[in-house]
Picture 1 (cartoon, rainbow, N blue to C red):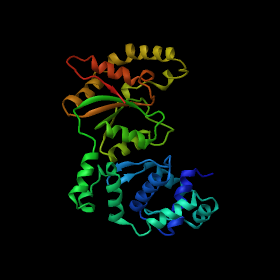
Picture 2: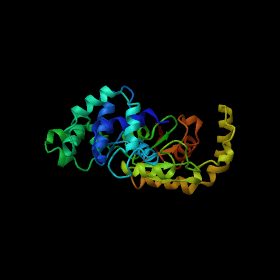
Picture 3: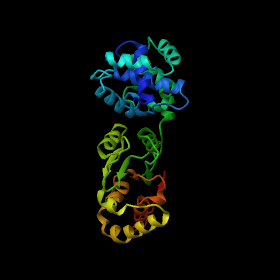
Picture 4: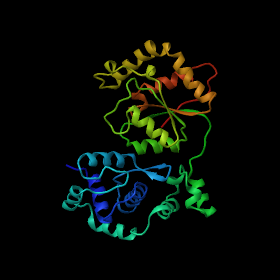
Length: 297
């Protein structure tokens, strides 16, 4: 059974009726979600060539495995994919109108269209000067670019967020280094295991570091149901673990004070009060002459 968002990919490709390059398809998918969906099937981050969805590529890999897409860099339906697309198309009228409108727009002209209309998604692009020779267009991108803020300390959880939502939150807070304080950085949620998350951070210009010594063992996290359970766990962590982690805390301090990074501590829980990252932040705040207060995203 296909997710509706994967059916959208098949419907779009079938409506275009031809092979679509990877860069073009990302821009077309982005425009469709922005123009025709109240709740976008895919979310995007600013990337080297503009708007990019990691989740769409994860879905592409799944559909290649299912024999619905050709295993190549471009986006191409197999015969089975074409049959599947026509059995249950997604909003066929809107897709047909959209594909007709953008049938002749490809390459730099398509990228430029996205950049002019949605300048935030061009803020990490490496080809702005090429596709937008008009200085006025580039000024709009400069205005949309998140400010470069002073070094600082933040915390963030990924609970309830897609990878793209999470990355955009980091970018808009001007985070330059993500410090993963999970003991075992594995997740059943797409994009948040160590390998995927570090690669995604690198793609949007954020350095990724993992300090497992600041994590809490899985065996300690079982049967946490109430705030009292969390409070008891955190008390043990604060008394038995953190006093032995001076070297790890000093690493974070050096990243901020000597290397000039704006650091975000990350773990799973959405609320800082339910997560040990708040205790790590508190421990940093108590260091001699450390003057920064943590901001919780």
